Amino acid sequence: MRGLLLTTAMVGLGLAVSPALHAANEVATVTVTTQKAPHVLVLDGTLEAVKSATVSAQTNGRIVKLNFDVNDLVPAGASLLEITSKEQGAELAAAEADYARALALNVEAQKTLERYQQLFPQGAISKGAMDQAIASAKSTQQAASAAKAQITKARESLKYTVVSAPYSGVVTARHVEEGETVSPGQPLLSGYATDKMRAVIQVPQRYRDALIKAGAVDVSLADGRQFKVTNPVIFGFTDTQSHAYKVRLPLPENTPALLPGSWIKARFPVDERDITLIPQSALYSVNELSGVYLKQGDKFVLQQVRLGETRGNDVEVLAGLQAGDVIAANAYQVLLTHPVQQ
Image (tube, rainbow, N blue to C red; front, top):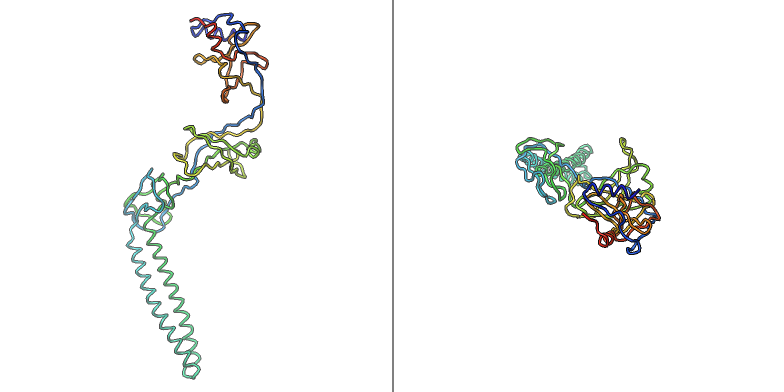
């Protein structure tokens, strides 16, 4: 009865099947057995950049030059854009003038204190005048330090008019236009570094312990590249909506052509199960139909099977065979000896 279904299907495809295909003792056979194999959980995930950021304005001004746009590759330290610097330059000049004045007053106060310290033991200077000289010397010294700090602040503000890339990467968004006036904290450009990437997956709660036990995850990219990640980072809390654990899978540094947002497949074993494997040579395939030649008595009958994953030279059979069945080791050997007529 198992062969009858497949025979009917092949007739529907326009193929005639011989009822008695071949004598069994003329064809090499394989006895179907089951074996233990890891049950692998397959999860979808995405790639994301380890370093991604949005650069914001740190000073007021109008944008006078945009050096990069979306999708441009930017070297580390390169000038992303420039902001008007007249106001910042004027502030620096004023700060330098204030510092010069404070420094001059401090020098005068220190010299006055030195003279008073020489005259005070002789009684030429009163105690009040001496105290006033000491206080003036300390005050002008602090004023000079404060003025110097204002120069540092003004210089930094002037540097902020040229926005530089914090690391080498790709620009993903431009939030401003040339000629636009910006203020501190306003987003300017967004981007990510291309040298470090990771895959991110959501692992259901019931598989968390299995992942910890496995200790490694196989990551497959859409282009066929595969990576074995031995240091998965499992978050210590679940997502509020999916109630799954977020897991980060670091990929090797400087791997080319990794794009954030790309889909990946992540696999790791969760338990064991019984599987049935047969040699690929035992398969007979036509269009969408897959089958094997099953030994029945001293003859072979084509038996339809449903296939699973390919494992090396073998293929997993999900349905259509059971342990103890004997099949032809080479399906086309049967066809060559007793070909199917069109």
